[in-house]
View (cartoon, rainbow, N blue to C red):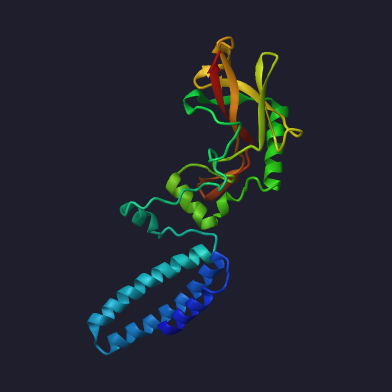
Length: 265
């Protein structure tokens, strides 16, 4: 029986099958192997070979438990309250896989040139309704152009549940965000206005600087320093959180987060 299962496993390895489908096939094959182990256990016990019989019984119960979990996670959209894997992970100090988009922000690409990290700071934007619409439209464009994916990094329902249970914080569809293809900053009527888009012709105002570091933009003396936009990232959007009766998905606005560089005059 086990030789047959091993042969089928080897045969499946040569076929390109989506991971979840392959897991379902393995679960079904494992079920037949589990039935065979029940038969072997029964034969040991009826022949009064109690030591081996009890050992096989324990292994059969353990395998049955994991088959049950596999069935719940790969054939339904539910989770099991009897799942002990989080306890095992905690006991063995196994860290859950970091949930992040493949285009996670602060990736190693050039933005608006190279800046000394000691002279760059995060800044916050404030925007009006029109500018918020522009940000949301930009997000739609970036998703359409496959510049960012809003698929929760390809996680299935079970993996999302595990991530929410382990991290206990919202899980965003676009992950931590991604750098925007084009961005710039201009001083207009005394305000540092940030523009962002797929490219320069399509760039629109998405807000103006409110704070740089811990200081209000009004507290910064423009006669002593010059500000430059070092990087701009698209963040936010729809996300999932834990609810009382399961996972809840919430649609939210997208945001633009920026890094500002400065030089002394």
